[in-house]
Length: 260
Image 1 (cartoon, rainbow, N blue to C red):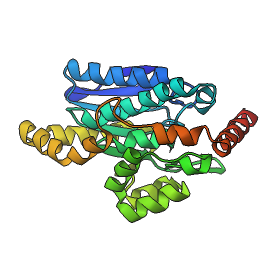
Image 2: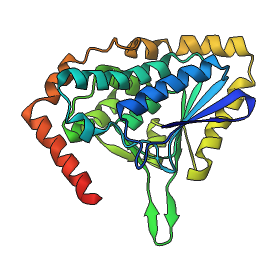
Image 3: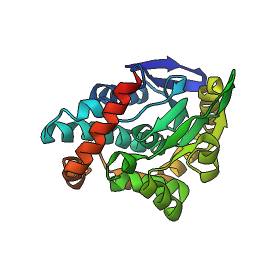
């Protein structure tokens, strides 16, 4: 589910590989967190988190989550926040190579990285392909937990974060760049290389100064997410099991099945 690919300068790419859309099932989340820790233990100097061309991640695996009782659902969501925490606390820089669409949980993972490169729109014959990113949880009936809101505010500012979160708005890649949600755009085939280039530039700096400054600069992000297992999901889970939320989520799953 996670492909570990070496690059030059001690950079390691962790590529999510759970077809067809890299839905964030607990197995994928656990594998990604383990691969991140292993890469650091093995001496990685920088890490690229990537997905498949055209699809970074479609977010949490909602059809799977809908079948869980409260304890199992809590465990599954804690797996998600554990990966977010691992990214926030990673001792080496992590660049998100957003290789395509990145709604909801996919966008959240990118928030906890150091830098975000997203695939820009492209022309495919007669079609314009526009890649989308955003925290659309409200549109599918979910409350956005505070650690995620804090991470978004850190990037785009409080008022813009409020507008994006409350509306659950998805942005095209160019809009995301203008809003500060991503840092750079590249053709889909060059996204990983652009992310690796960012890391190479960092690694060319005096190491202790760069890492020490980075640790201080990211203290607010680490405080927002806490350590693995520290996020209180009680209010979120209460909302999940409300009739309105369940209906919206089941309607979403039905629409996804109809598209297959």
